[in-house]
Length: 264
Image (tube, rainbow, N blue to C red; front, side, top):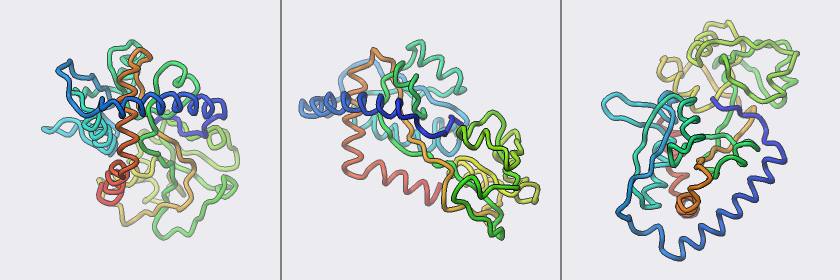
């Protein structure tokens, strides 16, 4: 899971500038009718991870599946080009983006370096880092101070923001996977589990323990997620941004997100 810490002000400034440029270019592209026809051209190469349900994973016999797959596919359909989604380990996908071997990689959390190195289109959705507790546990959360003396289940190699990662007034209990953290929660070995809300809900459903947990109303953090393109793919970025704006305006993207939140 990408680092979900608060966005630095420098990143926000860079994001606003880049988004302004994309908005201007995308508006011009839309007025020119650029997103209405499919040109006879090579497909856009789209990279994504293969193991992060319910956002993006490989469904046996069906191929790429997940909320992010559906969102980005809908945007590409609106933009008009043919495309080819290729799934792989996240680290390999990032290398492919850096080397320009793909046109698109989706699911990135913003950082100053990423806005410097890539064209960032979005955000196309937000990711909520939330706390799960046992259904009968009265714990509430507003600030990190509320975790004093508690044990929080985390996942190895994941980061949850500097304030959480460096805090010393509660205990972090790492597990290899979110599923193992959830099972520890149900067994009473940890007080809370922290992670992506939709991913935790999905994994609890797979384990048959959805009725044994609940989510606290206040998230630890909310992070926007972006689509990244190599810096020499400016025309593609403009087309994709025009499609994103159109689908935000008509509610298409939000309808997909809400359906996944309700049904998975």
